[in-house]
Image (cartoon, rainbow, N blue to C red):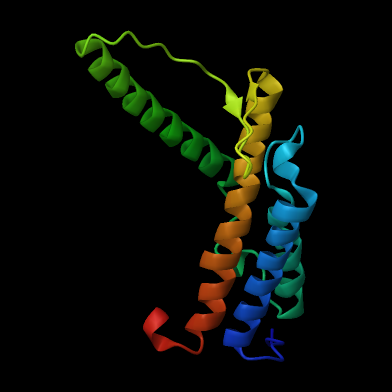
Amino acid sequence: MERNIKCKPNNLCMIIFMLCLSVRFVEYFLIETDKTAIGENVLHKVVGIILLALVLKKINLTWGDIGFQKNGFVSGILKGLLLGSVCFAVSFGLELGILALQGNPAYLEIYISSFSLTGSQIKNTDFVFFLLCVLFNIINVWMEEGVFRGLFLKTLSETKPFIQ
């Protein structure tokens, strides 16, 4: 299938980056989703995924061309969750152990806190917030890996041999 790129790969990447950055600024400073019950700035990631899908269709690339595979999708997510859980368990275990050796009693609280540019912080302990946190992180990875490590590297490597 022939590629349908009407602008240079450098320009394509800069246009996509600037569009994503513009939506990010609108979300951070005008919509302020970090101050809502969602507690995350996820809108610009969803817009980035939609933009990525449109660009892939326009230049005749597939999700597989930029590194996404249908086989092992769920197992990849589960492996990532397992790796993250093990790393957190080890790091928090070490921290709690060091604090105990120093005579500082420590305890572990499990909650989801929202990120806010204004510094406001809300602690959520309901299970649904943990599920939302995982979902938002999957959306984050999908957008960032798809755009930056997928599309940008794929299109730039065709004209820049040092990237290969």
